[in-house]
Figure 1 (spheres, rainbow, N blue to C red):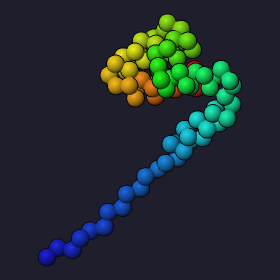
Figure 2 (figure 1 turned 120 degrees about the horizontal axis):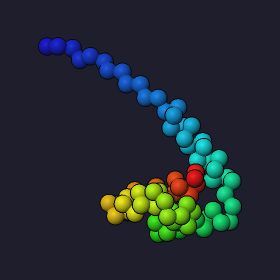
Figure 3 (figure 1 turned 180 degrees about the vertical axis):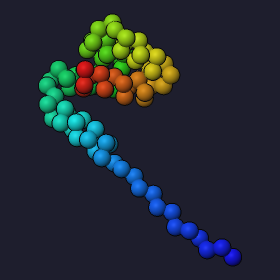
Figure 4 (figure 1 turned 120 degrees about the vertical axis):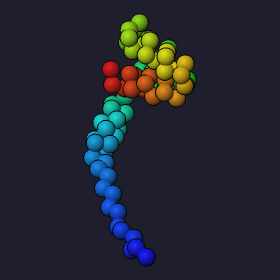
Length: 84
């Protein structure tokens, strides 16, 4: 009978941690208008994007993502609202 072999799996979370730190830093800097954009991005993602960046490629990407699935549209809208 063969003996089982040990398998080591190393996962590096440093890039995820950096992303999380930048998101938390940005959330700490939100103004009243930004909070309204975030609420709008949660409930009506394309509206938040068009109000934030106008009728640009980002808007059409968001419409497509929202049609494909509401959650991807929300994630994209939050990204646009917080980081663009």
